[in-house]
Length: 360
Image (cartoon, rainbow, N blue to C red; front, side, top):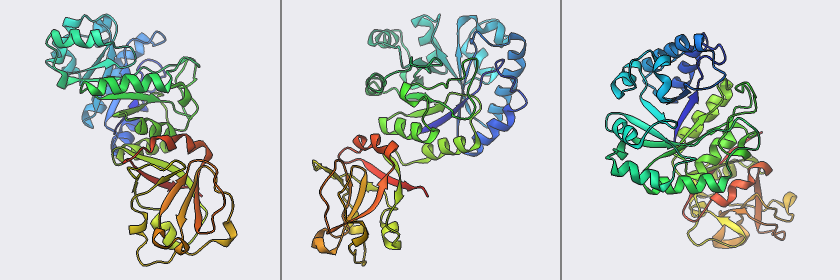
């Protein structure tokens, strides 16, 4: 999954910090920068020099710069006309065309450079019109809006439906998540696409978007912490289509930790009450899994269990419990998904990969 940061020239007086911030992101493998040139609160006098700093630094690190622009951006950009060549010469590699662009103009741009559509608002008739006007779909991707005001963000169901539709047309889709460290003014309420992500950690929100099948994720706020940048980069390096869940190890046996460090695949024949891993029994090697008599209790939603030798040929099978089940002495409750992560369990669909990350 591609990852990106966001910067807003003329808004927060961050010109001096921009080069360092872009360098940090680039060194972590983050390849995209989103910016907007029509934010009402921007300081017009500061916008030009800060934008120049952004573009020069991003070009040095060969980052994809996505600029949300309108036809009135010529004065800001210092160009006579809004043409693909003039924009590319500035160092903008992708234009997000939202307000004020005709279908024919958008199609023209797509034949010369990358353009981005608003994934939250585009409709089938617009996409059909773009194709009819000769747009080059190979140069088109889409990015959802972010929503600064609380309770205005998208629902998961709507964003997921829009994303699936666009992807079915061959268009990749991205979305925004909020920083919990440095939020953009003037509201400072976070800049997520999904309302439920407004107060989620960068790690959890990014992993949720990955589970939803997003192709790229951006931190919408301009001043994330170093840890948030690292969490974003980690999600971007994850194997495609893998659901990552954080939990706590309850069993300290080294061979159990080693077993649960693998990436698993959910069986194609889903059980009603648990998620069964295809590979557990083959990963256990020559170890004998013994019962954990100290932890024989009702199996709760989110428990990660490993079958013991008492289950005979099932020894080593790894399961995630989906609903409370009776105590079972033949299985070991080896770990537990964090409660706030349990909402990710339904994304582990048949045939999908999943793995665990342990916290202390």
